[in-house]
Image (cartoon, rainbow, N blue to C red; front, side):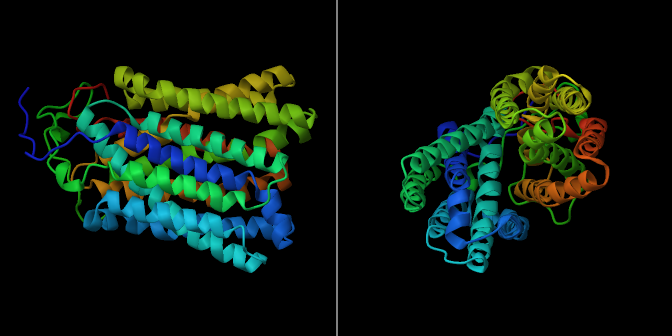
Length: 409
């Protein structure tokens, strides 16, 4: 197999640095979400007002995400992520001081813009490291995010248990800044990855016409068809993940009549299998490919949802929650990898796919909520099953397009 010569400055990037930045992102978010009741009480918000304020986070992220690729092209992911670690951490810390719901909305809107850029920027760096090392690291990076979120939520829970006020937010924000900035300083600069070594012939199962091309950091103008289709795959995975976090525990309690503790246990089981699935997702992709992952994951997740909604047994519902989490776990990070390999698009493709996917976090909860009011929560979740079926149908778009090493599609 012949190859295109690599740039003389090419560096492989630090896996540990990317893992820490992902974990810091999860930690910062987890420690804030764990104190939402205290934040709500501090500003005197009811549930509806808190929900509107929290939407500011998603809106801010979606407004900023489309510009991230160009920012990284100009300044590099190291500088962009470092700046956003500072801005997002400052925003989270400021939540300890906001006195009213409008100011909470404004603070979350501003914080959300930094969080959205941070998210895309670290995925871009993760894609660089992954391509140059020739194996699937992205699921591990996202597993680090999940683990960081668990640690952050645990720290917040301990603070609440000990009666610590919202001073926890700025204190732990400092921890995030230190971890994030030190790790981001180890990011490989974009000039070191511009001419990535890729196969001159297609990897197993991939279209040979798409092999042997350098992966551009900047990217061509205009959104391409693969980006849109990969974005729909990612959106479907995000919708399935968000639906579980928003509605799974409530489904068990309201529809199946289980105790509240059992609903929480099922949601915990979902998140545990999400983390486990991401840890095993990388080796799975390296052996069987992303197409197989998406097909199998989509079928497992759909089976899990149908089991939770239709099975009369609470034990079966718990098993369904496990399948739901395991099936959807590695698809979002796999889609980030696929986006990074779109020929001639590079960073811009990851930006487009991330923006499409995060739309699920805005329309998902309200759509399912409206359907639940009309037809019941169990039937409302059939919407998620429909998107999972679409995801399985679109699986071939996840085929590998260029790596430093050969791997299955």
